[in-house]
Length: 407
Ligand code: ADP
Ligand code: ASP
Ligand code: MG
Image (tube, rainbow, N blue to C red; front, top):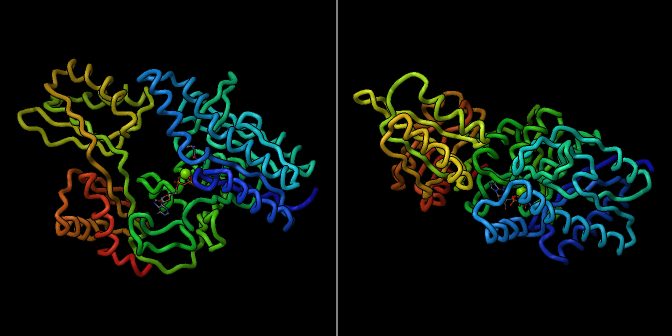
């Protein structure tokens, strides 16, 4: 069989019910008829992953990571097998493979495993027999043959890793919006779609809440030089190409707004201002794989200071279990946690003199009556922590203030 190899991925909404799976099958058949050889990664149907997590939590508050991953991996097994059946019913030879069967090797970090290797031997064999290969996304296997999952949204990463492993020209990500916009189109109706965006900017957007792409997928695309095309599975409208340049579009300095409501804040009060204390607090968090973001240490008053940082809400309890004994040990009187906050960020590689942009961002939030709880910046991003209830308002106000309605 000849023809170029194309790797596609369809997200949860796109395979949300039987009719949608049949629709995806039709799209695949059309591409095969156009002469391409297809490897198709799928997510679990609709809200399946959330439902499986909820089920596990009915058994125990803290399900063991190994069993939880094996359970969650079944969501993608369901959608991949159904899609293969739909294709065969339509007369298109196809085969469904689990992540393990597709040769996706990962480390042992359950729930957030990293892909270490891709062995596409089986996929190649199947392609050579003229089959469309359907791969269950979001999962892999360790050296010890335990099933792992790649973190929420991880099917994107499966697709990019396979595109790299197979030497495909690009990975095509089909979702429920028509591409990457300069704000979440569900929050901002005036959001503008990009025809192209850089890996660097997309990584920042994805890491700060634009869940249309899994951050690790963007990172992998950049490292492996795999362009990622994001488009709708429901229309033929042109999508967005994430790539390394050069770029043809004239654009705003502030590229886009992102928001993230998966934020929990931990504050440790009255931390003694001595060398080594921060290391003492953050090392055990790092060792247990909790990713800490937005760390702020206040100026000390009478050799005592407050330390504040954020983690994702699903990791709050684990983080507190680690932090509380350390706080006791260093005689910090209290540890506070809250989960009513959210991050809003402005992102753009052109924001070289951040000060002016920061001022405009803070004024915009102030004029919208929004209090800023914390501020962090990177070279291409400014992030404010605000009340979760004001996220929509904040994103819309910033979208307007930075003139993003005009694209
Ligand atoms: P899938 O199930 O296809 O993986 P996701 O729900 O993970 O889809 O991601 C698509 C969603 O990402 C969209 O429905 C949209 O609400 C959201 N989103 C957030 N920010 C952006 C953005 N800047 N551009 C496009 N979509 C965005
Ligand atoms: N089904 C998984 C999730 O909901 C992976 C994915 O959709 O990419 O996070
Ligand atoms: Mg997704």
